[in-house]
Image (cartoon, rainbow, N blue to C red; front, side, top):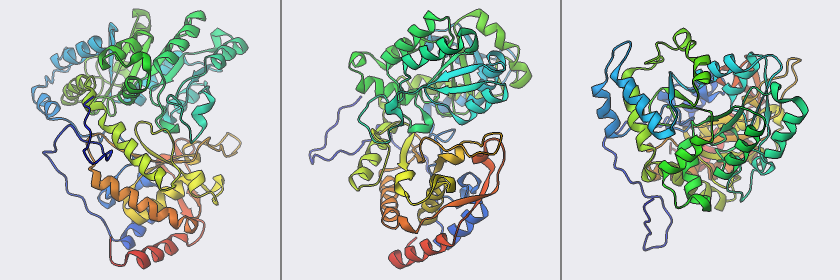
Amino acid sequence: MANIKYYSGKKIPLEMHKVRIVQKLRLLPIEERLDAITKAGNNTFLLNNRDVFLDMLTDSGVNAMSDQQEAAMMIADDSYAGSETFVRFESKLKEIFGMDYVLPFHQGRACENILSQVFVGEGQIVPMNYHFTTTKAHININGGRVEEIIIDAGLEVTSNHSFKGNMDPEKLKKIVHEHGREKIAFVRMEAGTNLVGGQPFSMQNLRDIRQVCDAHQLILVMDASLLSDNLHFIKTKEEACQHLSIREITRQMADLCDIIYFSARKLGCARGGGMCIRTPELYGTMKELIPLYEGFLTYGGMSVREIEAITVGLEETMDEDIIDQGPQFIEYMVNELDKRGIPVVTPPGGLGCHIDAKCFVDHIPQTEYPAGALASALYLISGIRGMERGTISEQREEDGTEVLANMELLRLALPRRVFTMSQIEYAIDRLSWLYEHRKLVRGLVFTEEPQILRFFFGKLRPVSDWQQKLCQQFKKDFGDSL
């Protein structure tokens, strides 16, 4: 990682790239933003992008590609079967992860579908450091259930623990002892726990979990979608790994796993996905489902142009100066908000800046979805689209009981190489204003509630006229400013 200090003593991330293609943005007046969020049912997923100023909904499929990725797309071989593009993709994955078998997928949740169909049976358990929404849904649909065994510090919003995404090995041993090895479908480690602040796990923790898996003949699966951030944190925070290159850290992590899958919409900065498999037995159980659900074995539902871009993007992930830009921007934003007393998840993780909505709007009960309300309020006063990562992102029990999330977070994703520092400063400024007027924000209630993945499609309404009052306060303080 480039070591660059400012003479002034300021700590500001310095991008190790230049911008050569720009996309025009527009910031609507607040009255139009109110109309847009109302039509979207107070669900930021349902906003039209033309009504969004800064899109911090996700880093999935919206990272900026490099010039080398764009160039690679021009040499794609579009053969249906036996494509040279796939050969390059397969070779790169084998080189980086050291596994002999590769399957292509159109994105990460497609990997989860096949994994769950093949390995999860009725009543089986998948222990993991923490769930992701689609992962849990696939496991549940196939009759299994998730056991979250993240370390206790992982659910502490404010902490100085460097690896809050660690899995607790003793809890894993306890699950195996209580239920028996045959009840464990596989063990899943998510590299960068998405729903609890993008927090990483350590190399040592992965070794500890591998030991437990070996002792009980369990399959260890790593979701590597957010691997690039996790690599950065291992390199910079785990003393035993600081002398290793990113490529060496990656290989050591891979050597501890039986299966690695990823969404290339995150890892690789393109649009697709893949799975690396250690043994022919595991490979054989899954490959026959690829043509059924994804496409032929040498394209897997992806455009060959995207496959070429992923191949280059995976190689670029081995470059420390490329993968550290995201975490550095996130760290800057988190630290600046923390200085202003705004509740954020600490230490800064990967993926984005996470606002603690349970504390930010502590007057809103969880049953009225504080993280969703905060996402709606932030869009209203700034045009910034974030994502609710709280109770709306859970789903009800079969009897209709609401499942309250461990954390109520507003995630402000920072896609790689997309935003400028002035745009980050704008987001900090608007959050600071909103925090001063947080008592104006009230809750939401569902008007349309799907049974599965309701955070994608559901619509809500405010419990009162609080949005109009927030607009009035904004106009009073900002006048004609957008």
